[in-house]
Image 1 (tube, rainbow, N blue to C red):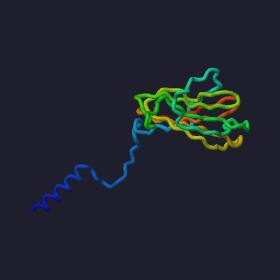
Image 2 (cartoon, rainbow, N blue to C red):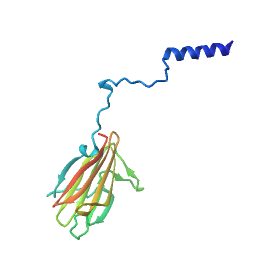
Image 3 (tube, rainbow, N blue to C red):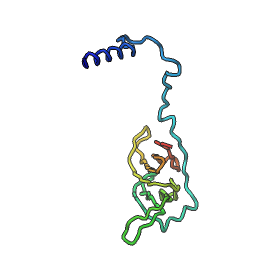
Image 4 (cartoon, rainbow, N blue to C red):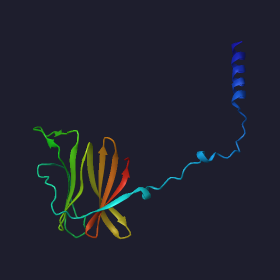
Length: 172
């Protein structure tokens, strides 16, 4: 009896739900048509960063990363340093606040560039790598910003006496 009731219920469900086994030939409504996706390249924002005459005083700040490489292509080593306003305690442990100021500075023979100078709630990391394009190889400085409410990757390349910043990725 139970099996008969179960089979009858399943058949009734299938009939009411409209299982026909045929493909629908109806066109989707206009509102159901997916919108074309924009490419990532179209969303990238760029800006130029030039030499600054009076750089921020970061003497008491904690250096979080440092590279010595020729990023300007002039044959001389440049110094790329990431600083934070957070300090270390007596044991050498970082004393993170709710927000920290961060500065990424490049010191070159031409002068000082503060490529990044912002206060965020989160952490910042950097790297320097080689990139190859139609003009040859260049150094790429990448900044990874891990904020509590957003994530962002900014790339910096030196061209014609200035750095160009490109926001390569952002959740903001």
